Length: 112
Length: 117
Image (cartoon, rainbow over all chains, first blue to last red; front, side, top):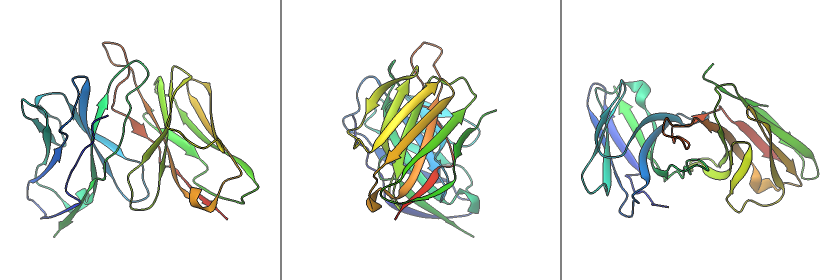
């Protein structure tokens, strides 16, 4: 299963755009790139998922270059409530279930 | 109902006790997962159930025994645990994709905070 590497921590200020890049050099053809957010003492929450190019939803965008060896989660205009740990996962979808293996995560701190 | 419900929220047990963690979802999801999370660490996958059958066991010690009585329920039976097993235990579920197979958009419960004394 592809291993992911992402920065351990990032700081930002309210209203800024935050980009978190994840490296997954040995991603396989069947792997999808998925991002989760986790607040302390809560379960992770799905943010966004993609296979290639760009995906956008109401909370974030995900940019994936053609070689798929990295991806960038973009959070527009962050607020204090976006302070959390963000996990990048690559997960193969197959009939036995998506094997979701979490990497070390990026601890994002948003300051006023 | 878009929730995964875990009970109890907190559990303290002795090393000789037997206890069970419960997880329930009513979203019709056909994959369910158990994760273990230690403080300041990412969640670690323990088990995956797919269509009520155990499909993945990540070499978890036998003192942890999963059970899937039906498509909505997932249990984790605990016996003879060690203090180092103290952690947040998370349950998750995910739906089928339109093309068949199971989606990686998983819904997590709030977890059970387990303390082994």
